[in-house]
Image (tube, rainbow, N blue to C red; front, side, top):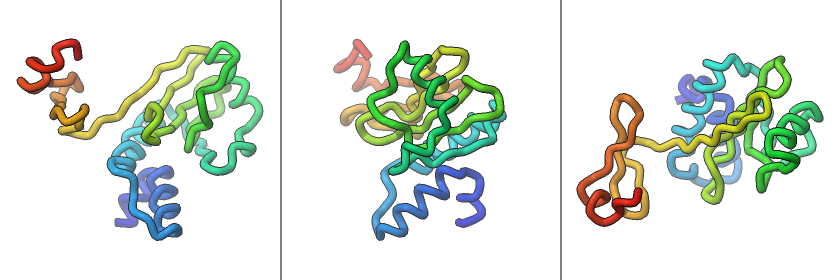
Length: 149
């Protein structure tokens, strides 16, 4: 198990924090950690900051990037984790609690909001799946009862 956790800095942190508190992991949090770590690796964002419970450690240049990218505003809360590289203004923020988006990629003042879904993710009580191309596949139940989605 430990060798798999070492593939994601955030997964290691989540596991250690919950183990220390003698609590279970939030559903799908490890999946989100591994997906976001993979994105960070592909973007060569090699530096990692654990912001959880310690937002004052966010470097000023990253905070400026985040504020500027949101038009002078920060997200409603600090992220759990920040991945960044030496290039200023390019960051990947991992949120992932039940009340926010899973991640936000910030580059040159632009934001891309990311929602990570495991296979057979739930949308209410409606099964939602996705294909190999990453496109969502709505069930017959969704098509007939929630056609707007």
